[in-house]
Length: 45
Image 1 (cartoon, one colour):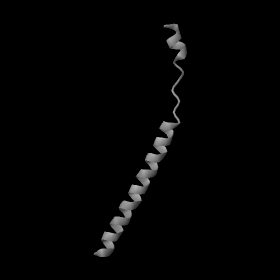
Image 2 (image 1 turned 135 degrees about the horizontal axis):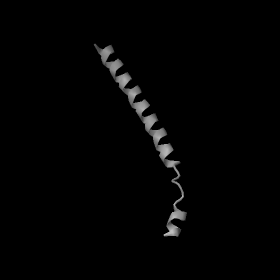
Image 3 (image 1 turned 30 degrees about the vertical axis):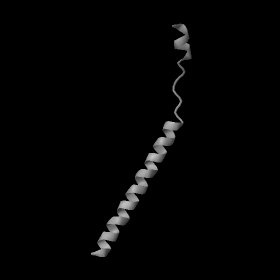
Image 4 (image 1 turned 90 degrees about the vertical axis):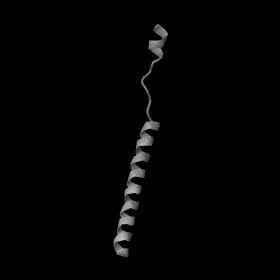
């Protein structure tokens, strides 16, 4: 029984590690995002 609980805890740890890695990659892509230039549109108005 203890082995099953340890295996479940280990799998949960791997899931948390995977989700953290995906969120870190996603956040890095958001941080590197450059919106298109809007200065030309605002100058015409």
